[in-house]
Figure 1 (cartoon, one colour):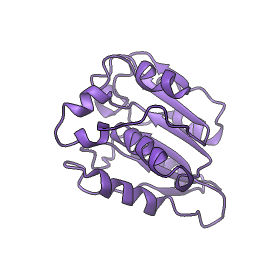
Figure 2 (cartoon, rainbow, N blue to C red):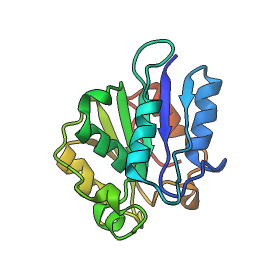
Figure 3 (tube, rainbow, N blue to C red):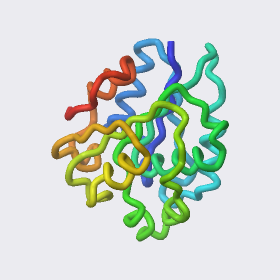
Figure 4 (cartoon, rainbow, N blue to C red):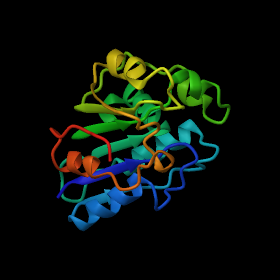
Amino acid sequence: MNTYLILHGYQNHRPAGHWQHWLAGQLAEHGHEVRYPQLPEPDAPVLEEWLAALREHLGRPAGGGRPVVLAHSLSVLLWLRAAALAPDAVDVERVLLVAPPSPTVTASIPEIAAFADGLDLGVRLKAPTRLVYGDGDPYCPEGADGHYGVPLGLDSDRVPAGAHLNPDSGYGPWPAVLEWCEDPAVRLSAR
C-alpha cells in the first residue's frame, strides 16, 4: 500500500469529472491511502494558506514510508515553492508535476500572482520528479518543458493535443496516470 497526495489547481473544487477525482477513486479501490484535500479558498488562494495545508497533508503515512505527490496546475508552483522554502519538509517518494501554468501567465492573474513572485527555478528537487504537459496549454503557451523541465532538469512527457490536461481538454479518466502511480517507469501518454 502506498500513500498518494493529490493536489489540485486554481479554481478547482475537485469535480467528479476531473482525472484527479477519478484517480483518487481508482487508487482507493486498489487499497492505497489517498489524500485529496480541498485546498483553502481555491478561487482566491493565499500562498501561505496553501503551504500550510500542504505541510498538514504531507504527514507520515499510516503504514510508514513516504507519500507520492501528484500536483496539477497551480499546485505545481505550490510544490516548487515548498521545495525551495523547506526542502527537508517535502520528503516524498516521488512527484508528478502536471500542466503547470507559466510564471508569466500566473503573474498576470491577480488572485494567484503571489505563487509566481520569486519562484526559484534553480531549486534542487530531492525526490524523483516527472513533468507531464500538453501541447496547446493556454496557461503555458510557451511550453512547460522550457519553463520547468529544462531549468529543473526534469524527466518530461509531452502529451500531444493535451492542452491543460483537465476535463475541458478531455481528461476525466486517464489510465496512463494510474499506471504511473503503480509503476514510475511508465511514460505518461494521452488518455
